[in-house]
Length: 271
Image (cartoon, rainbow, N blue to C red; front, side):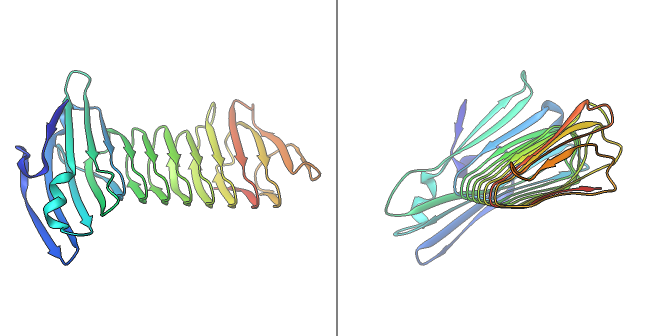
């Protein structure tokens, strides 16, 4: 793995710039990579937001904004190091942002990515919200203390956060999502057969919409909440109000819909 200091990135294609206001400083740089060399992009940072979207050209464009707050903030921007691994054999582009653990100041790095829709993305952060739109070959988003929003995506999706909501606007394919202290709202175009739609929360309501053509076993569970299933869905099952569990099925039961929370309502609707 090659370590590249932020200000000396050889592949820098857009000008980097810095700003300094009192005890706050930030610095932004943009780098392009040839998308034809990779099948997936992996980025990991701390204390930062990540936004990912698709483009129609042949480039992976990554913009990173480092920031520091605290005494002598500007001179400590270089404490944040960017590690880039261009694995063209395994066809994986990896970027790891190394952030110091110092009590006298705060460090962070935000990421903004655009890339062709066919590339898989694996994005990890902490203390930051995440947004992804348009990806058609799967995605994995992991954060803590942050909200996750995805829209018009496809493939296998894995979403994980704590203390944050999850919002899904028409994902096509299998999906799993987990949060604590967050609400889930999702529209999922599951595969007609053998599909998976699974969401788990605590202290948050779950509302999921799926097509009525889906074949799946259905399990819904909550505590201190109500369970509601759209009568327009062709379900066959029972609701055990004593155990706060609803079990049902649609079609040939080849897929799975599993929704679980505590201290919240769960609603399954027709998409």
